[in-house]
Image (cartoon, rainbow, N blue to C red; front, side, top):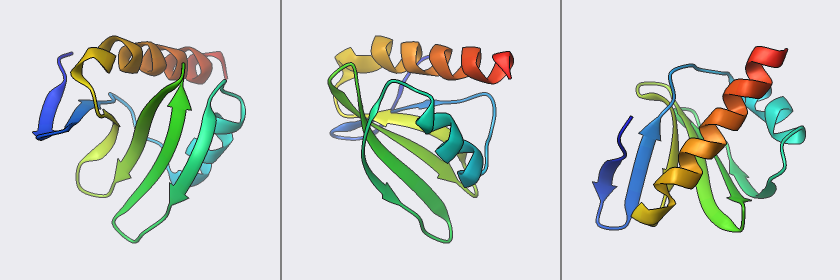
Length: 93
């Protein structure tokens, strides 16, 4: 899985699974992340958080599905680590 460049300063990694907002809220409660802000809208919900001291955005979009976004290309490996952590928690349930 390779990061996609969304714009000049934003990268995205799509997730192979989807959750609704309530499932994501529950998932975030059990993860070792620092939630900064949550934005809920009709078409896309976003969770801004710190993971290993770096900024990420988890986006659940009606049309595009679930992805994790980040501001520095060099954080791609951390984004993948975050995705692996989500996957392990989900498979454990």
